[in-house]
Image (cartoon, rainbow, N blue to C red; front, side, top):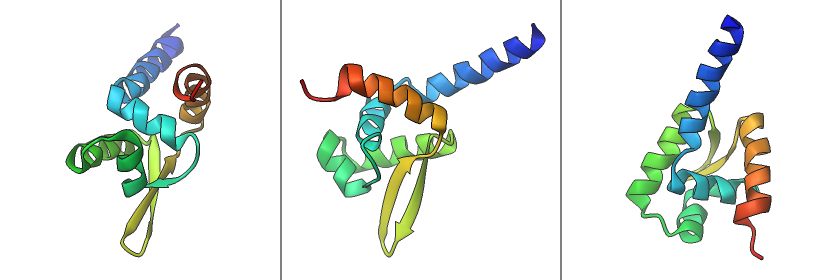
Length: 97
């Protein structure tokens, strides 16, 4: 029972990292594949300053990773569980009808 409680606390913290409309919107686009910051801003309409804050939160939570190519940062989903959860959410809520 103690092991399950520890896992529940970890999962709760994990879900808090996703529990933002802006972060979910970002992840809906990242589930389609790697995107740079400019592409994410254009796709979501989130202001650059706000985008940076959300991407930093997602990085801190190990939800996304980035790679640098010259001056451009490219983001992708780094956590398999996030990808699995977002694939389901994408099918039900993100993709166009």
